[in-house]
Image (cartoon, rainbow, N blue to C red; front, side):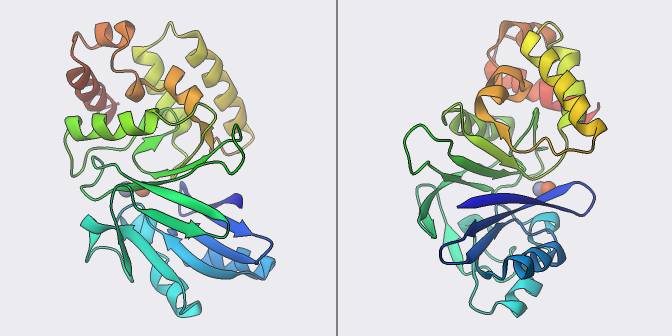
Length: 257
Ligand code: ZN
Ligand code: FE
């Protein structure tokens, strides 16, 4: 399974999963149909699945048009998003599995950004290789999604789940927000050397308009303030000794940043 990233709208990424053997493809969160159709044409591949993480328009905007072009496509989403994802046929919950080509994806229920948000984790076929995590707007490179339909407690639970995945897991998040996220991170975790190094790398990447996605779970654990609610430096920065409160205060500060 090859994963490629297709930029869409102003700062979204659509992920295209391709199996060259069977020449079939799947997409995660098609914000827009156009870039997907163009790539499918280049590959001469058939679209067999749309994996949606949540109902927001910048994640499901291409569903309808892709359905028209590929009437056989299966459209997946979370069970709590019933009625909110155009064309949804499969209603997933925590622990469900999805298949694509030779790979099995595990469904994680990760509410917080929205009440029905799910993530898809494809463990590696060969032990030690990186797995692929498609986490929508739950975890970002250096940040996390806003809490539109969820509570800090829910989001901490959701991010805790993602944080248990292996360090080499590739984190395919749906937006190019990394530079701004790290600028915020530095305001609360300035002494973190891993964060300083990462910020320099990301600045350089963005100067050349290179994507900073995928990220790596190990890097996120060391530098993303929204996975570091028990770090003394971050707790001190928000004057709390409670994990959820630390997270909530960080999220509130980021909302105003
Ligand atoms: Zn969203
Ligand atoms: Fe989004």
